[in-house]
Length: 334
Ligand SMILES: O=c1[nH]cnc2c1ncn2[C@H]1C[C@H](O)[C@@H](CO)O1
Ligand SMILES: [Zn+2]
Image 1 (cartoon, protein in one colour):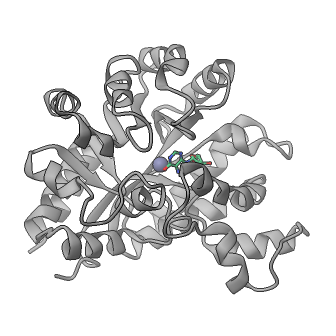
Image 2: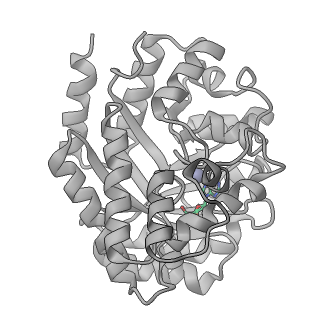
């Protein structure tokens, strides 16, 4: 099966975890920022996580250098364009990119400038390639509720202009979902879609909490639903799509091996499984790589990948017009 040619949809891709290492290295040098490496080869290990980290916390360490070069309009636009370009070149037809806007205000950009630069990168990539994109704003678990509310408030004017949803990301182990409930109540009121990282390396209870308290329509990862039947049933009964990212899950120790990753078992139980990279650079994967790994270790067939496309399209936060265009890609694929 040629998985590269398969039309694909990616719903869970962090911009800051998906910048080309060569771009990060180039921009750090251009901006005279000290780097602990002399060559790109040496630099790679600072932005790519080991195959197995000690925990999600070690994985999240790899976002330090990317953040340093995401503090200007030009860089934000270029980086976003390149992530879309890389995705388009492996037949991703629609991508929902995400990032945490408050992490990009360190060198004087305003919130609006940050969002506008990223949206411009998306727009330029859409003009050049056969790919559509939308943007999800991440609230960070360790940050204050005031900061979360401020993202929801300031992002509001960008709904319908490319911003489609609010997410909760970061250290799940120490910061349960309910801390940010007020921000998610407000997000729902304002008409954002909602997705929440849950059941990645935290407790499976975070999945039902995210659905019931934070109004999640989709769950980022959700692997821990394998450990509790009531949780899995709640995912199925509420038609919650899971944004599953196998390689990232192994790195963060959410799952021990590819063979034990639950995505195929969930798919066979009619869970709305979708597949993504999470972080193309930090996890050193493309979506094609993920598909190849799944066909090797989890026995995914072409029909399974088509079902994943259909699930992803239905669960996407795209307009009905875009969804219709995307449907045609899979209907036409033989
Ligand atoms: O897999 C993840 N789990 C939780 N948080 C994550 C993951 N990958 C990236 N992040 C965090 C680090 C980024 O700086 C932030 C926004 O993209 O989201
Ligand atoms: Zn993620």
